[in-house]
Image (cartoon, rainbow, N blue to C red; front, side):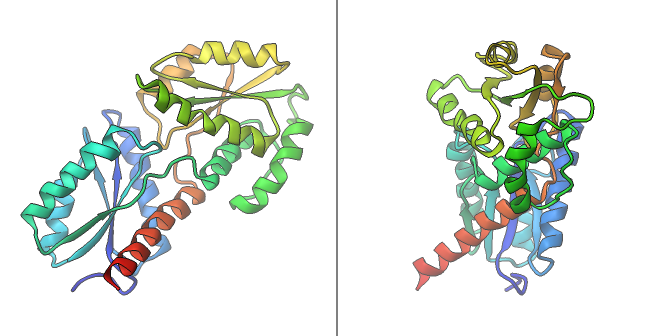
Length: 272
């Protein structure tokens, strides 16, 4: 049974985009994931708009003799794609390949490691003197560094606008807003939540941060990859600093493997 010496194969499933930067970024992320555990087969698939599709990757793994696959959604929220689209795709794939065990892992969500990764991107965009590449020492250093505002270009107070996709579901937006609160706790800086597709938009977040005393504003994208929506945010607020997306940050790699490991452990318990 081709599982790799370390366990089942892993399919990392990204959303997909018409913007080629998005697929390229997710390919870079999954390359880092694969490099972290070379004994486990790792594949990238997309839900829509990019290739290869989930069906194509599942069919290929089945053809190669794999019988156990963990599917990790590269999604920041537990919305329609994670709750409906992907389970339906996997159920249909299971009917095509009855000997293939497909287990869907939990979404990435507002994991503390990803919050720290966003803080890392903010610190770098402010030109703060933080050279750490790992999350743990970075979290310890960030509050003091951001509070001191030691950017060589300015000592003005920094505020952070956390920007996410947004949803027509107000409850989903409230759940996403936890990211801003957790980022404030990590950085010690005022934060406001905003969205690229619904209100409150980025202009309101910038105004609120300035009303709270922030003289420099950094937009922290709660996005894994760049694309049309991150471009929209830049166009809507070109006068402020825009941090990089999470991208191929070591924290994202760690979270993906954590979701995989949790699913493997659950499989072992259920089969015991």
